[in-house]
Length: 234
Image (cartoon, rainbow, N blue to C red; front, side, top):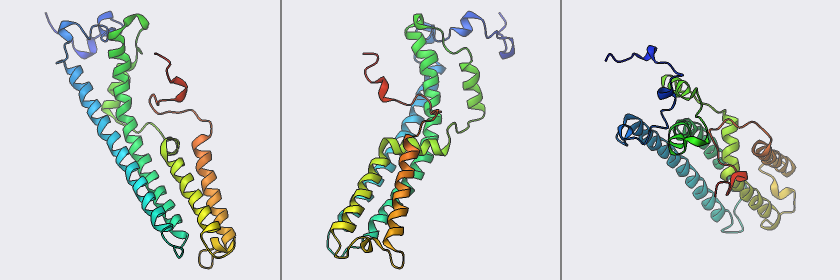
């Protein structure tokens, strides 16, 4: 029997639409091309997840070194802590960019999980997204970043960097108030820059990071884990 071409396939055909339901049948064994595709996407996602972790690890390592050196003697200048915050900011921007790439691969994995594997395991819970093939095909033809840089920064701030900035900010406040012989606000001065200006700029930057992290928004990241779902399906 002649094989149908791609343009002859009816997307409403039951066999075509219910690909996920037949995943665990003999002809859809784990050696199928779909399984290989899924394993490849999981590998990509895992690789980019590891890149995120490496950036976070370096950020924690740099912060630990700066804090250790900054409080190792009474003559250590407070602005070394500000340099540590600048380094954390650089790591944050780098990690946010990597997160945008990670979201691309994770989106593909979640598309396959939701519309093929989840449906194959339990078809009674509902049909998959009728347009999932079209969306995945378009993504393979033209891969594009799906979330903005600002959203990626907000995600990484929520996960780790807001805590790191809080620790560094608190350490700076302690250093300029309790570990320097000069009185506040002169103890916060950097060269010719008065202490009030330094403190005001630092407070503004910190609260800008807080607002970026917590402000309400419509998240575009693919199936980001949320605390409201803890224990939901146990």
